[in-house]
Structure formats: C-alpha cells, structure tokens
Image (cartoon, rainbow, N blue to C red; front, side):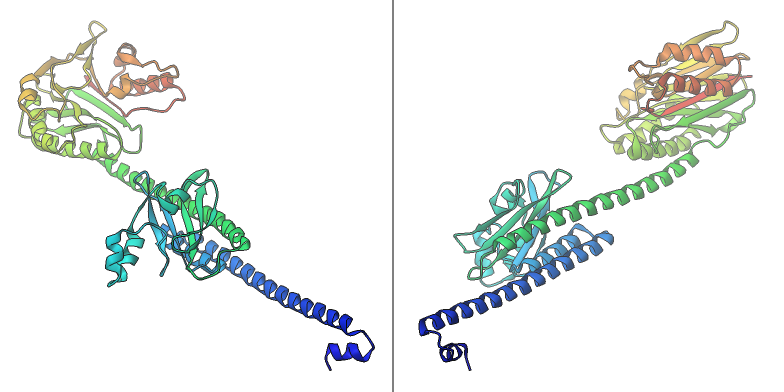
Amino acid sequence: MNELTTALMTGIPLIVALSLLIALINHRRRAKRMRRQFREMAGEEERMFSFLHDLGLVIGREPSDAALSRMIVEGVLKVVGASGGAIYQESHETGFLNPAYVSEDCPPLVEVPVQVLEKARTDPRALESHLRLARVAVGDGLIGKGFSMPEAIRVQEPEDGLSVMVSPLRYAGKDIGVLAVARRPGGESFTDNDFAVFRSVAEQSSFAIGNARVHREANEKKEIEGELKNAREVQRVLLPQEDPVVTGFRVNGTNLPARIISGDYYDYIELPDGKLGVVVADVSGKGVAAGLLMAMCRSLLRAVSLANASPSAVLSAVNRYLFPDIREDMFISMIYGVLDPADGSLLFARAGHEPALIFRMASGEVELSKPKGLALGIDSGNVFERVTADERITLASGDCVLLFTDGVKEALNGVEEEFGLERLSATFREAARLGAEAVVRQVQDEVRSFTGEGPQMDDVTIVAIEKR
C-alpha cells in the first residue's frame, strides 16, 4: 500500500495528500543525491589520500623529473577525473618550458603547427610525438602564460570546447613549471570542487618536485665532492713526497690549495751529473681545469728536462707542446731552475712568473732576480723563445733562494690589503738565516696571520733553496 492510499484512508484531503507525496518524493531524491555526493566525496578523498601516499613513496626513491612528473599527472587525472594532463618544467635555456610528461591521449594543450595536424591525419603518432617533445616559450599560449600566473585558473576553451585547469608550480619562491589537466569536448566541465582539489594537488606537486630536486642536487654535490677529493689525492701524489737530496743544498717546499684541486704545483727532477731541477708553476684559474693542465704540464716538463741542460730551452719545448692544446683563456707562469753541486750555482729561466728572491748571508740583504720571459701557452713559440733567457746565480754558504706563486704576494687581509712583496722580503730576510725549512714555515705563518679568518683566495706554493 503506497503513501497516497494510506493518506486517503486516514481521511486526509487529496490536495494535502498529494503535497505530502511530492515533498516525500523530493526528500527521497535529495537524500539519494546527497548519498551519491557523499560517496563521490568519499571516493575523491580516498583518491586524494592515495595520491599523496604514492607521491611520498616516489619522492623517497629520489626519482628523475620525468618519473615524478608522470606519477603526478597520472595521479591528478584520477583525482579530478580528467581526460589528460601534462607537466612542463623550466628549460635550461632561459625563456622556454620543456614537457616533462604528457599523458596518453592528452588533448593538445599547446599550439600545434598545421603541418603536424596534416601529418597526424594519416599517422596519429605525429601529434603525440609533437606534444611530447615540443618546447613552449614562456608567455606563449595557455601553458606559457601559466608559468608566470599568480595562481591556478580554470578556463573553458571556446574554440575546441576543452575544459582546462592550469596551475603554476613554484618552490621556495621560484617558478619551476606548469601543471595542466583537461576534459575533452562533450564531457562535463570542471566543477568548483574539482578546481579546489586541483589547486591543492598542484601545491603538493610543487613541493614534491622542488624537494626532489633539492635532494638530488645535494646527492650530486656529495658525489662531485667525493670525486674531487679523490682527484686531490691523485694530485697530491704528483707533488714531492719528501725533500730531495742534492749535494751542498737543502731544499724544502709546500703547496696549499685554495680549493680541493690546486692549479699550483712544484716539483724536483733528478738530472744527470747529480744536478737537480726545481720548478714552481701557477696555472691560471682554479679548480679541475687548472688541475688537469697542471698534471699535463708536469709530465711534459719531466720528459723534456732530461734532454736539455738549458732551463729556457726546456720551457720553450714545453710551450711548443702545450700551445696547440691549451684554452685561449688559460696560461701557465713558471720558474724552472737547475741546481749544480759542482759550482754551487742555480741556472734558471722565468716564464711570466713571480721573481726569485735571493738572501745573501754576507750582507744580510735580499736581492730580486727576474730574467725576461713570457708565460706558457700565450705564444706558439717564436716570440716566447726570443724573449725567454737563462740567468745564473752563484750561491755562497748560507745564501738562500725563495721561489713562490702569486698566492703568497697577493694574499688579502680584512681590509683588502695585499701581503705584498715588501712584507714577503722582510719575512724571508728574517727566516733565511735559519734555513730552508724555517723559511717555508715562517712565510706560511706570516701569510696566515696577515689574512686572519678570511678565506684563502688563491693557491699558495713556496720553495726555499739553501746553500750549505
């Protein structure tokens, strides 16, 4: 027995009974609609939690931008019920966005050239390939404009009937990309609730992409630092491991890199007749490039020096070998000398390097010696060989020679004042009477005291040669 029959049997007027019936039917419809909305909301909430859960798992595995973008787009499509979507991320080339991921059957969200559309009539893969590969200029079209928009937008494209939601992706105040989803023509437009959910998902996606990048960059930095430390250990092996033994002389040196890899180096080379080659060099610039050039220069010098008695001839040969392969913005300054125990002399040549300082025990004075010479790698050879010349210094007992790189003289204190050649000469004069080891140690101490807590701006290399 239905509600109308019941109402009539109880004596309720027909019009009232009909009104009650209509109200009851409407109530049931509303209840049914509310139950359906509740189920939809519950399902949407479940999909949202599932998306966030999956997002957390993916981030924990430190994914690539492409893998994370795919997970985000596919997750968003399920949450808001879109037909397709895409993430575009900022390109290394400023002013452009590259597609990080475009879902299958995604409606075109960017302008498609006519020739691509024509080709797609016979080959659907042409359109798919274009959408997955074509970059977008910032400010161009819905995607390009979305990159710099202040917040997400929802639009109904009048030309193709697409319902689209677009949101900029930002992390730590920096624009990093664009997220967009769409429903095909003929389907329902995105609702206010869909848009609210989309904005929330876009915010979480921005954080996920930015956070993943930070972790990836941190790990890459650790790997690079590890590789550089290994390279530094290799480079350390190339430096002298102990003081050389040469009759009538005491030699001591040190290298203090400003960074992990040094562009300075010094070396001792055993030569025929008990002679010793001593070299101090400074490669322009710092870091890996300077370190590699230093290693190459060291090998060349060691090979060439055994066949040439003249330091200037050695430097000329090294320059000719180096010049074809050295970058235009790089060069090497070098001072190379040969100690001769037979007559107690130092024969040396200078290739654009700092001068040699000579302490004379007899007078207690410091002399400056700077024979002419051009830096290695600047000229192919003709000019270099014309201007580079040897100079011989005869040393008496107690005399001392100081070779150094510009990192010593140009060290800065807190008020941007250089340590300078005058301070270096005074320090050398004071320490020279105590021998080669004392000279190297005291120069280091004075430079460190002068610069204070400030960072070391350049590599420092010091070699002292004492005549016994």
